[in-house]
Length: 95
View (cartoon, rainbow, N blue to C red):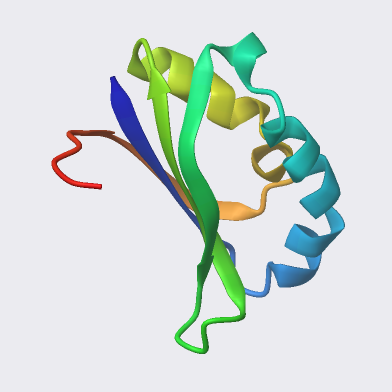
């Protein structure tokens, strides 16, 4: 099943995001231990198209609990970068 993880950073969180960016990228390089396959992911940006303000993932996993465990293991989650994270099921229609 596909899921979307939508995380919005805390206000003024960019410095902390950048401090943890390498650990976050390393974590995402192999997600097999978490039972999650990343279909697509990347940073959300402000309207300037440059300033990172959050994260978006489309992942494939057996169930929501698997996705929640994956998200909680992410260094960005552990560092408290995201103010709010929403996880929802997703039905792919195009693309």
